[in-house]
Amino acid sequence: MKTILLIGLGRFGQHVARKLHGLGHQVMAVDSDEERVDTVLPFVTNAQIGDSTSREFLSALDIPNFDVCIVAIGDKFQNSLETADLLKELGAKKVIARASRGVQEKFLLRCGADEVVYPEKQLAAWVAIRCTSEHILDYIELDKNYSIFELSTPEEWSGRSILQLDLRRKYGINVLGIRNEHGLNMSITPDMVLDETSSVLILGQQKEVQKCLHL
Image 1 (cartoon, one colour):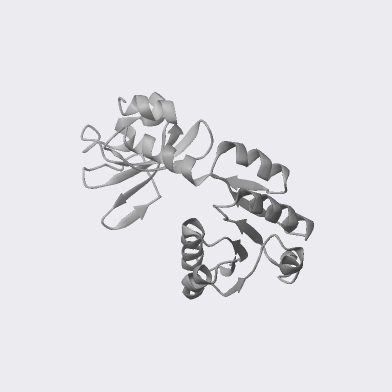
Image 2 (cartoon, rainbow, N blue to C red):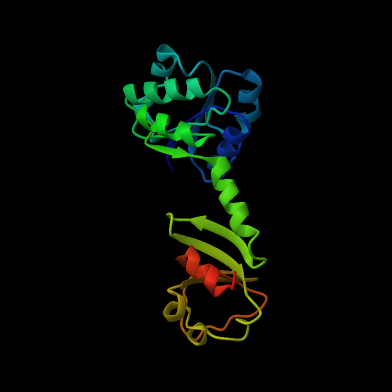
């Protein structure tokens, strides 16, 4: 469990608050809008109405005590920059900031953010990958080359074992897990047989996965 300061409670910030709550973390939520703060009260440990560009306000929150500070401000980029900068000055251990455009990422990193998330860009990548094949159920990009894909079992894979498919030798693809009605099995052996009711988690280079799926 981590203690997290979440600043900015628009749609993105509210989704983050709910997810962190579901994961069991302690969250302090901050926004200048009272209605937004009231919306997330059921999902956070504490909440404050205030201006995150105010040094006095942030100082009162005891910033060094948080494991992570998330700047999720989406409508006023100048406020995001000032907030990230102040958090670092006040001793934040780690600052994660949201960008809505590519150029914003560079400025946020220069102003103290340790990491920048770009929801629109990440969603666009997911949609682009997802629509290329009816088999792709989910997708996690690890870097510019490697990704984890969850696939519904292609018809030509059904009834064949991991050894028979020989994906590692042919495409450099590793099978990480198989999901079926009983849950996710990560203990993969060469003799495991796939069927059309299951889905498969694979790790590989995007271009090799595309080649494997004939995209």
